[in-house]
Length: 140
Image (cartoon, rainbow, N blue to C red; front, side, top):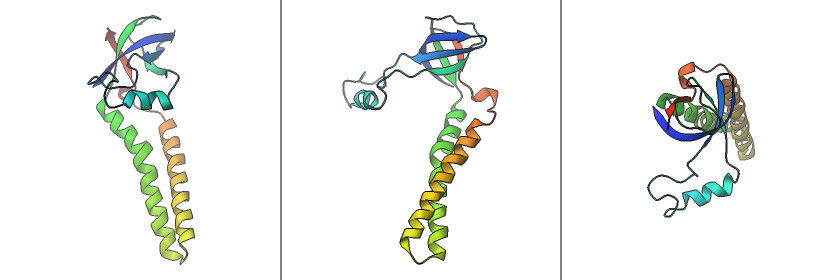
């Protein structure tokens, strides 16, 4: 399980909206060394909030620990990054094999990429197993 400390922002029945307390830098340099926190601020100027399961009935303002299964993260990475990339390559090779023009091969790759993103969105919208959802495990 991968854990992180978050702040409870909003609650409703059994689901809760939380905001990470970490600002985008790793724990090694606290944003003073490699610049990852500056890069995070560039692309995510507004703090992000996530919906999690709340079996311990945490209240607004509580600092809690959220955990997610490691396998769920690997499945998400495969779905979001690898599936579109594989379909891009397949589209490029398949169209490029049957047409003499490189422009058509590039268009086939682009079509494969778009299909990969649509397929990833469709697969991610389907019901996920309950052990893949982030869950509040304890108060901090």
